[in-house]
Length: 378
Image (cartoon, helix red, strand yellow):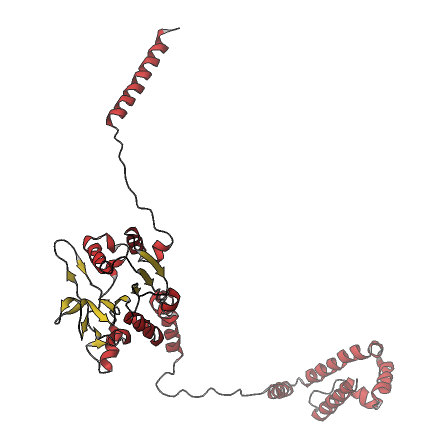
């Protein structure tokens, strides 16, 4: 074996060994956690993280899509968290909740979300300052109108209730958070043997918000005092906007150009202001008037024979269609055949087929009339 290939093989092995040694010396195994995208209920229900957290603490938790005290079989020591607009609770549900609260239940609910249109309508009705909410008003809780304001937790805990509507309580409370000047953000109001917890908003209980230290502590305090006896019902209501509101918010890219096009078309078709335009002149001659004028023109310039020839050609054309045998004849034989068919004198037929003199108006009219009569009798 030649020494040169052996040298090349040893050199390649040395390079591979050096690369492996460098890799093993510099390589370091590192673990990395990657959050997978959420699926199922974790996407559609913002209270999914709260349900899992309470279940890990040994609490009995149930999730619901709508508030139905009969179907939920609420017990005396149960807690209901209603994540929805309290104005959507009708009179029947409101009476059922009041009866359940009087028996020892606990309801956690938030004031309606800020809505400038609702505040304006409330002010127009002479109720400026408080938004009417029947369920809360019966327990002395009055929701304020106006812009929301945050509460700073301090010590790096962040801010809460930045999108909530503050409220006032006219009556005894067991827990109060806030002041009379700025309004309350949390109050626990006694309701018979039960309790009504009212908050400015429930955003701190969502899955993403619970990762904050201050939010988790507040959630623990909110659900801790009731002990482990009752079931916690988490009701997340999906408020679907109306079709017209959805089209207004999401479909403006379509309806706005169409509206502009319609406005432009209407502007082009609108009545113009200015002096009145004269009405268009009607047609000066009808069809018969044009025919008469053409005949008079031919006669004036000595072409009466053309008028006679045109009508004679029309007669022969119909004769060929109705009686080809008579049309094939010539001279007196054809005249005799026409006399038998048309029942007209032979002299009249003979004169009608001859061209009249150029300026003989009476002869032209008589022969044209005879041709018309002969044509109609075919």
